[in-house]
Figure 1 (tube, helix red, strand yellow):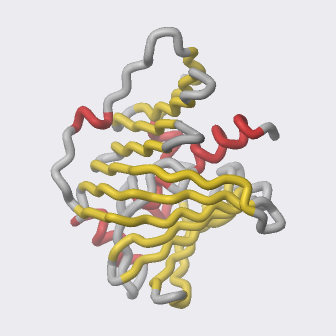
Figure 2 (figure 1 turned 180 degrees about the horizontal axis):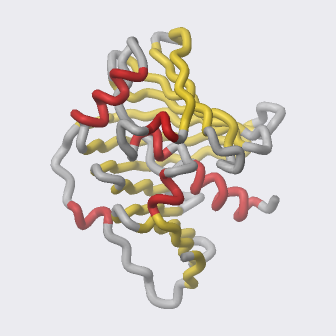
Length: 207
């Protein structure tokens, strides 16, 4: 898989990820869906190959606004945007000058975004397991029920009820580690942040 294609696949897997999770498990995750309506955070994303060697690291910022609106902005040297307006998800690869479009229901039903950008029916798509605490974090493991989801498992870590860490392993054995910082819960967000207009001269592929 070439580097650009890998980055596109990885971005689809990493759509929207944030939230609260308390130490006593799945019931508290559902409580988060009811109480947290928006979020803002910075993140660092690091990708490792099957042997644990770092192959990519990029910083960025993300926004979440329920229901099903999210935005991930990746900074240089891998500039990309992932924006959901609640109906469609747009992945804009600035280097390629290409936008890939998918419907939200298809993305949220098979990706880690469904864990946090979706709703309390998360167990319809994922098997959730409470893991032992690690480095001061309360952790939850999510395994997709669909075999063709593109990843094997997602582990989300929280410190004192605040999102801190997210790790996933894809179908090729490569792993992605995202650390979150400057987390704000329920900030006032302008809905226009979740609208996307295709720039002139940019190719559009998908639905």
